[in-house]
Image (cartoon, rainbow, N blue to C red; front, side, top):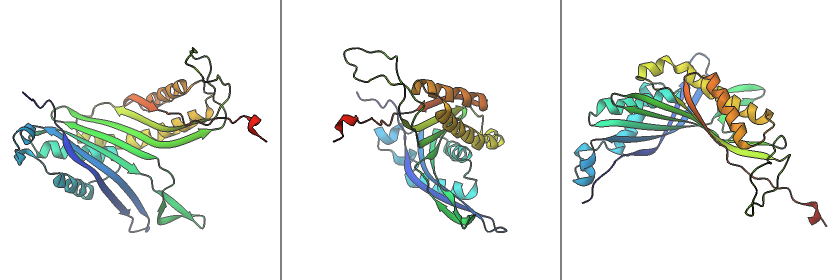
Length: 267
């Protein structure tokens, strides 16, 4: 006999764009996000008995995100994610876990005639800021923050040798090589009791993001890298030291290979 072991559903690709207008200076600040909401709880009968009475419609999820964005700050994204997740757990008693994923897209203020333009922006890269906020009934809120899609390259200062070699190895050992990667760096915060605890920590979220980004770029540039593994470990150590409220750091640094072409091909 079939049995439902787990269930989760939700709404993805909720696009949110909010403008903060300073009426005195005329300066605008913009935030663009893509939000995903996933819910868990007593929803088994919607699968097993076609009982839609336990379903919070995805249309409701989408509109809830819009209303929360109107009523509350959307920055830092850690706070906004926690607000949205907590709303679903507190509003619907049969929903016990709400997971909110936020991708904040990059908009950088333009410089025009040597001055920062008050309301014009450009996207100067594919890098995004990511947040996952998980509110669990009676167990607080878990937050994971991340940098994703940050493409970096250095033309020297990287080596790779001394690794295991056998009959399956063709990679030559090198003392100097081009190193390029697309950074995905995530850090998990100590558990928060509720939204109020997250509100009290608000300044720390942007500070941690800046620290993680600076550590990543400076270590990548300055480290005489013996391996990607060792370089990312050094990054993790520095972020943990800089942000005591973070309990774990993870990196993914996949190689973007550049191979030297032998000059014997020249004619």
